[in-house]
Length: 260
Image 1 (cartoon, one colour):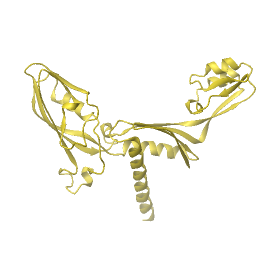
Image 2 (cartoon, one colour):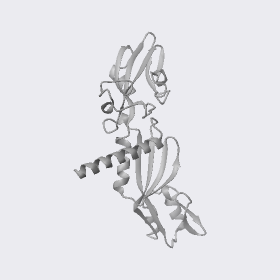
Image 3 (tube, rainbow, N blue to C red):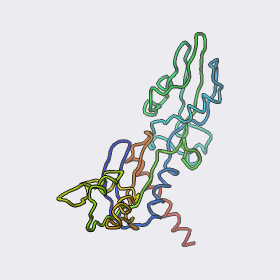
Image 4 (cartoon, rainbow, N blue to C red):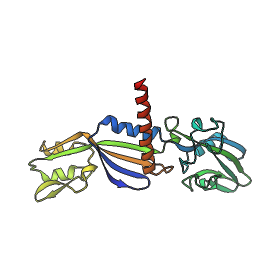
């Protein structure tokens, strides 16, 4: 299998998987979304809430806010030495205490761990009028997207690599203009593929229809274009490395079970 990175930044990576199968590409996708752990708020204890919103509404908003996660500092509750009772190695405490008038935002939530804070500072939580107040303590834990999407590190999807064969095209201008992704250009009186635009093709088939079959389009059965996105808890690179480690762990466990 060959892997080629096409685009890479903190929150998005696009790469190709060549000489593999749809099952393998989908396995990576499922592990990335469902198995890579992140921190998210699970419990909220309200001391005071005279805002317009119910406790449950505020707690729900807090639970969906992504938290910067250091996987080396925290354990999953079921794998912690405290056996899920709750300790500094598997729980993160966060506090909120604001009196109105004010617009309460994510930045107002104070974390006991400066490395694990709410990522998007300006996310609104609730508006407080004069003499209204909100005070609470939240507990965040590591979890997995398969249990609730608030723990998912991001989104991943893939598509088949397009294979385009261009024959003798008589209506060059029409074929070039019909592509919604701008994959084609007119070059020397012929239809050509724009440099670095092949991967933008989403196999809609417009070029085949307009060209009367002189442009042939088909998906590759062994090559895929994969896009991985991060909500911010982990960088895409770290989330993908964790995905690979989880896959290795599961395959090792599966091999042991087969031997039995």
